[in-house]
Image 1 (cartoon, rainbow, N blue to C red):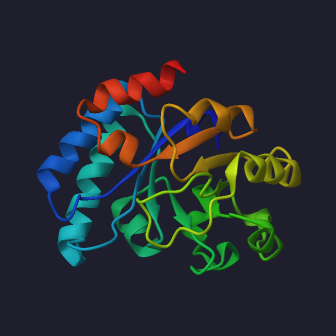
Image 2: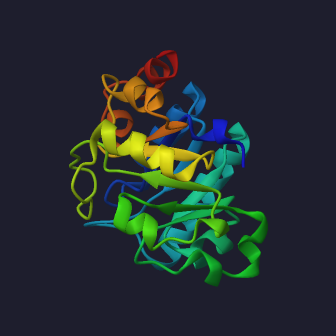
Length: 208
């Protein structure tokens, strides 16, 4: 993969099933210049079954229109059915080495947040890692303890040139510090999805 694709990695879902609004937010973010998109469908009101597949395919169409890689969170079957560019998995999901051969030519990302998770991870099978939460976050119920900029720097030193994206509590105020600490980019949820002007929020990140 091109590590530049991680520069501004927008993570979002259907916003509790509000597909029309969510697709508009995603379009605005793509138009403004996000470099990668991850469909993360979690929490109350999350789409399931055919509704989720239809949504994923709509998102896929948008990302193709703007030439931005489309990643699905956790769900390998959904990634395949929607024709995604790749999959992002966590420590408790299927091991990267056990993925279908369909993913051999796709982007595979793995969450690696600390020394314990790093020791348990086979990085030979992944294209990038997501490290964090760097800062405290309300966007992920399953996020662990914040590792801070120091933890991000430590991870960079451990993994060498492997592409790495920072995640967790990323704002306009701390985004640049993550890049300075060695991250190739940052995964952002609420700072874009919750912005009054989505396009302006994206452009501000890209100007930092």
